[in-house]
Length: 209
Image (cartoon, rainbow, N blue to C red; front, side):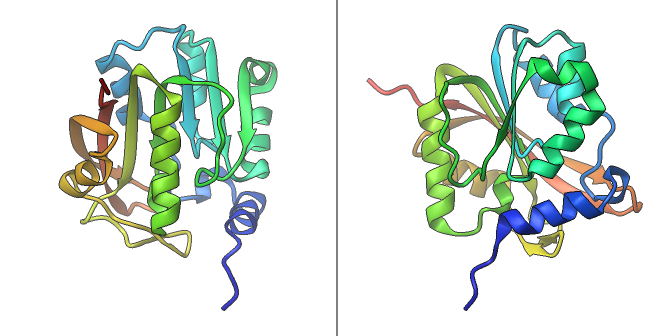
């Protein structure tokens, strides 16, 4: 069996589609921004957006005065699009081209945000590696926010199988390293007028003695 080339797939998506033509397009990522407000995340916090690609979260965070933002995506084309959109502001962001499943951070973060990257990890090894990496590279008082398709959401995205989660299954999956703070379910309206149901959960690291 030929192994699936995830990077090639996403490079092709971002090279051939306009932002308004992808299902995850959001001009204002309100749910994600609400978590920043809820936790009163200071503008000096080290923030990383996993799978941020050319999403607009980074634009809003820069406008809010955040000074230490990293954006990770598997696709260099997605990051190039974001840089072009931001223009001169792009130099204020740390851009990382890497697969979330094998990412090796060089710094620790106060706020780890992931909208719809984690659910593409369907193999146990990749999921475990991702969570271990997050646990090791989020500061002791830091926050992890994960948004995935819910059990009422799609089973595929961009032609790829995804792993659905509920509040219960996500909490159970993370309980080795993280304690749930809050979960919300959100309907995302795509540019094609379809509805995708997401579950977003926030977590804190379990404090080890």
